[in-house]
Length: 369
Ligand code: IMP
Ligand code: MG
Image 1 (cartoon, helix red, strand yellow):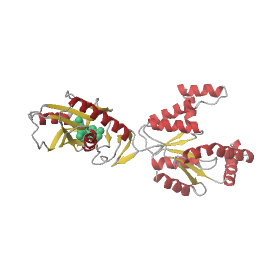
Image 2 (image 1 turned 60 degrees about the vertical axis):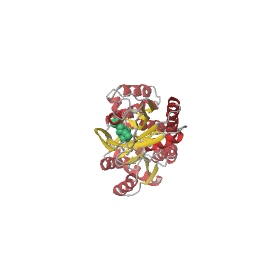
Image 3 (image 1 turned 180 degrees about the horizontal axis):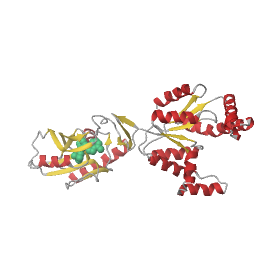
């Protein structure tokens, strides 16, 4: 992923794919033109990289020149095309091949046709590396198209977003979801996860998705997924990952404009972590970090026993049960620690101290994401 000015872009077309597309255009055009010596005309600025690669591959003699037009502002095409540098040579009787980086609305192409209307060229051939068929509003024939792409803004290989990105050898596409901070929050029982999740959600304006709550909500409201989950639970079986993922997906979609999410209680297995990565990827986003509160076992035992005195929770009253829960937590999360460490996304945070101290430690990690 890359950031240009305020926007995020993801890899879309590789250098290799571009090279192949350019080679195919060269082969087609060379075959069509035979021994005719064409004048290749690049439309600046965007086409400089294409023209350079194209003519290096072109197997026969040719001439190369440029005209400079401008139509784009930010990520939007405008009708108002400016002619910055026009034709500087007589092209009467010549075969002209326009080399465009991209054809979008076709406004620029219309201006090109206007420029060549009275030049008396033998033939005007239009070749473009990228073409957005859904955006094209004109009737001019496109003789050679490298790669058809959807109507989404791209950068790289000559194309820019407000001046940046032209130098990139591959092509990147604007992310539909802009930057989100998505956390997987972990902590052993008694680590203060709930308290910290509440602070983080306020401070970073995140949506807290607790899998337990999501399950209870779906079952209580008898949603289709809730009933499905319940049918497994009633048989004493584990709810399949896909059902849980579908529920989480619904929660994520309900909060489509969110700054990000705190996942709590999920994932628990490698398979679930992978499924969560896929879910985020489908939303053009990603998990940024697994943040785990680290608290010494003895401290946890003391805290939980203390809590048991007032909470009345049976599982907080018995020391051996508490120790067992803590042990189970480490056995289960060790796998996930490895999963996220391998992606450099694991952050352990010292969970001993005052609530404020721990919040500060967590914020230090999150602010760097
Ligand atoms: P058209 O006039 O709408 O066909 O757009 C052609 C010009 O707009 C191109 O030469 C580019 O300069 C610019 N353009 C169109 N689509 C994109 C894009 O996705 N990224 C960057 N520039 C673009
Ligand atoms: Mg252009």
